[in-house]
Length: 355
Image (cartoon, rainbow, N blue to C red; front, side, top):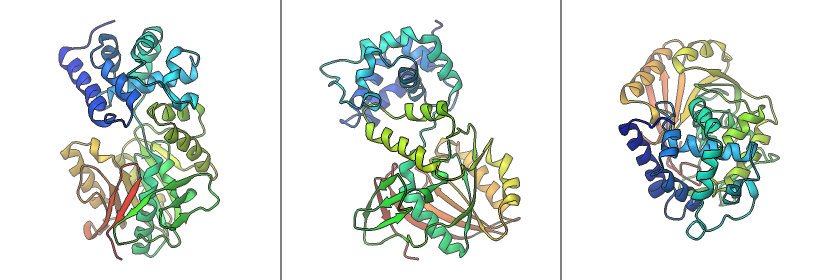
């Protein structure tokens, strides 16, 4: 086992600590927090996590690989009792029954396979709950366009957020929307005085996705990997993901293209039906870009709008306002519409737009 460089190991350790203290702390995910805390000071865990590719989240890859192998290869291991996502039973209190000894034994037992997964897989935790704000946002875009949409999503992972019209929605005040017979019901709380447009839905006539590493919902291994990225403390999110897999597959799966927006968008604009308005959208994608890459992405869409009008919808945590769309036509931003604010996983939506 080769120790990672000092700087790399320190950065990975800091990432584990950040998860333990900020993201999973405060009782949000106590088992995940306990595991991350232990990994932050363990040479074996740091070595394995440090094999992640640049731009990836090493803790998520390592702990995702553990859950993947626990489910697929070693479900009888003692570590499984800390995974309600796998057992359906509450986990022991990690302050009383520390998961680290079992996790450390699992890392040792499956070190080579974990290293392979961390090296080759990507973190693609595309939360289907995002559709709770994407559905009304796409409906607002369709109303603005006055025509059905040709939807192109950048970074769709396995395509779950490319089919928001296949899910049902409840917004907590008696407001419902979407496909009433869908096996998946997404719940979200509406905040503020304004209500989003939900009439007729987004009317998606055609759809496609672009992803650096597209996953296939028809592939059991890809579905298992997505599920393994759900933290062990959250069996409800894992169950919702299972239901989303079923709901998304009630219709034809969208075509996903491997690569970047600059590689595929020009051709997709040509392929989109002429009687539909192109809507390019993404959620929590440019958060992983450098400031230069974000500027290049914006310039690409503006240049492409010289060929064909593009309605550019985005929900990005590094941008304000977060939920908005821009009407790009003739290489110019004709209109920008601010839609509202939202919880990252769709738990609530505060709608601002009155149009």
